Length: 416
Image 1 (tube, rainbow, N blue to C red):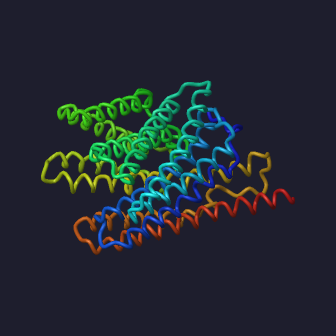
Image 2 (image 1 turned 30 degrees about the vertical axis):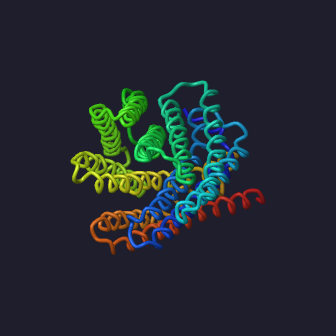
């Protein structure tokens, strides 16, 4: 049961959502300055704009809403925590991207300090809220494990950035692989799964996830990720293959079960947000196939890079776009409606017009196709860059339209 009475002010999650598209645009701008997607400094800078500046920014904003409403335990001092997370996360990401782009140690050191502070505040607040929750649910446990993997990811990232800045001799290949697996395979998948347990049945009118799956998926995935870390660090090849196989079995099961539930939805009308979700799950299945093929040594490097790119742009971005287009109109409607006033509150469907969402779906599909084409034909990267930039502009316009409708309606209701 949702604890809507404990929801934070709408400005708390919306400030994260409004900031995130700017980093999508920045990633496109950074990629546009290079000659190919394989330029390491550009790729590192753009990737962290996507993963930190966009994906983690949105997910951090979503956590501000999920913890009080879904598990019934608000963050302590939610307004202060929001600012103490948003500002370090945005400035730290800019500093990190600049450090990679210009090979500037001072910017990398600054990023380590700023991001370390921001993540310490955010992770501590999340753990306090989860610990205080009275109920024990599968969503709560998935969120807890997502926060733990974020902690590991952030720690490894700070170690790597500090190592690059200082020139310290580290096993960069192992640390980078661990950083990527815990960040994408842990933080991103676990949080998306935990949120999906609530969002998919509630907004897409599907049956609930099977109890055995929602209770077992997150802990199983977490254990497999830890096995992968052990195998990678101590070069236990057989354990590495086992953990990789188990991980992709779990990821594929999440995608297939989600697609199956969506096929059983009670309302059969075409829906743009559902299309985003299905594209995300299909991309996850594609990544699983590519990662399996990457076990063949001659194809390993190229397919591993391509699978990471598709995971970020095809899976993570697609699902996040779909969630934003559902959650933001709901938040606007809910915060206007919760005061007991019914007259004058806009319908959810009018807050962000469906036609804009469908345009974004089509644009995102074209961008993904351009990204895949660019892997074999370099000039197509300009189509991919343009697609990312246009998606940022379209999403920003949609979000600020929703914010404007909220502010205007609230003013009218207050003056009525």
